[in-house]
Amino acid sequence: MSAESLPNDKIISYKGDVLAGPSEVDGYEQLDEEQKILFANFLRNFYGAWEFPEKHQPIKVYYVEDENPYLRVDFAKGEWLHIQSPTVWY
Image (tube, rainbow, N blue to C red):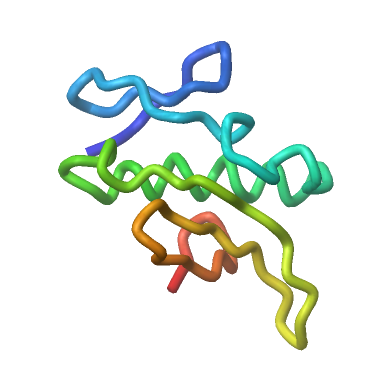
């Protein structure tokens, strides 16, 4: 499974569903350029990991300055993830 970007920053799933792009997620504009790139690359990989990615769209993203800094991504049902790299999240 894979997801590809559309010119307007939306992402299309392997099934053809148009998913929220990075800039549509609340908090995206507050990220610096490096964090925006990380989030966009993560989001493409994250959507590609799901059979039904439309059920797992993020609603908020922000940077957490911690001993090990990370991006925090929140989802509609209260779940959230630490984003360490485009391919490492937990």
